[in-house]
Length: 244
Image (cartoon, helix red, strand yellow):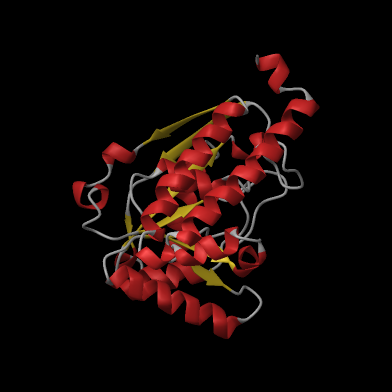
């Protein structure tokens, strides 16, 4: 079966099925919006979609470090800002599946243009950010800070975009200002293997293994210097990826 999964025709068929089933999931989420069930459905149905796609394409996955987090974070009592590296289109849906919480994701505004999917993401309460407008980006981060103060954790990719070569890009400051303004810790997350499974420039998944390593919380309030905070988070992500 593994040799079949590596054939181009199989990967094309799997990608086609993935697109069709993703649209079906998005439609279901949208239809549940009038009943106030979109957010719950978003996480449950999206996670099920991710698992079936990974299984279909021969991708194994694991999560490490979650149980080492303080109980308050794991229970959702202590909101945090999760910061994963960003190497693949798989990263957002995979983080959604790997973390046992229902955090708010900060997503680039271009996702809004994807038929059905963009509407489903909005219905689930995710926040779009306009990277081309500082004013609108700041407004989105303030909206995210309100969610954190209301007790919800947030996921933001500090690189702001996907890497083209698998390496870690420079970090944007927005997420760090968010954590500091909300007074919550940052939890670095390292995602290994996603770039090899689905690199930038293709929609065809390769068989492989993805590992999510959850790091140690870094209190933003203990690093008043933003550059020092960014360096601490970057150092931990590099260590989680085995680059440090």
